[in-house]
Length: 93
Image 1 (cartoon, helix red, strand yellow):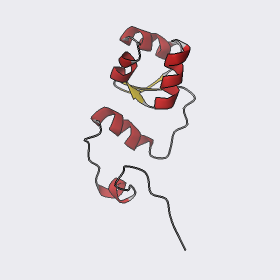
Image 2 (tube, helix red, strand yellow):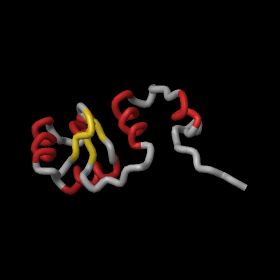
Image 3 (cartoon, one colour):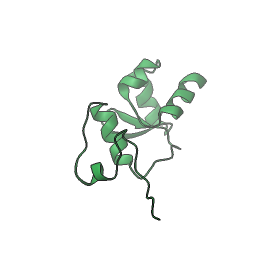
């Protein structure tokens, strides 16, 4: 993995195999990076850098990566998320 690819992956955080391919990494490259502990596999075709800072909504981030921008959320997840997909913060007064 070159410096440009490494920088892009750090910016993406959680990313898919397809996103990895878009920046020039093959499936074999990603497999080698996972085996060398330079990437973590968090689901089928879903990866993240080993030092990535995960938010409390990591489950939502993984689901978004798997299902894409047209996915919908419901239940308690929807209650704690605003219309732009960002986690709401408490505004106690």
